[in-house]
Image (cartoon, rainbow, N blue to C red; front, side, top):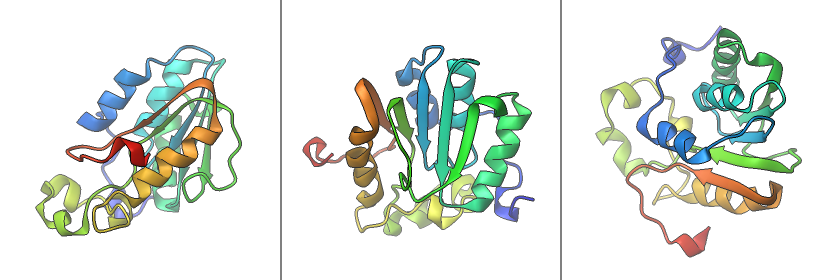
Length: 171
């Protein structure tokens, strides 16, 4: 059973950043996708639906509670047969190549958490929000750097950050 702060995360409604990631991905049938820091699996099951029965999605999260909800979501949406859920700290133990690596990782500065919308601040656990450094970019930048080594030639990496400006050379 999912932890109380994950109750109610059964909706197929993506947040704007997640929705934009899926639009940019332009997934094709048969592709192999990695969803890093998948949370409740909303991007995961959308990606699995897009790649079809010949494709696959590996989705990671450090939280067993989030993975429990992700498992229910992928089952509920009929794509569990093409999704592998892995408890991992970002990319630990994963092997490519992937056609697409997508992530909407924790990126909020600790100073900004109190200003988040109540539906985010009061329901998402801190581990899903805080970006691991004063500027909130430690986890997203690490995600972007490591992703390159797991992509097939010509593959795409998408890291979703809302309202954040970072030096593109840092990734």
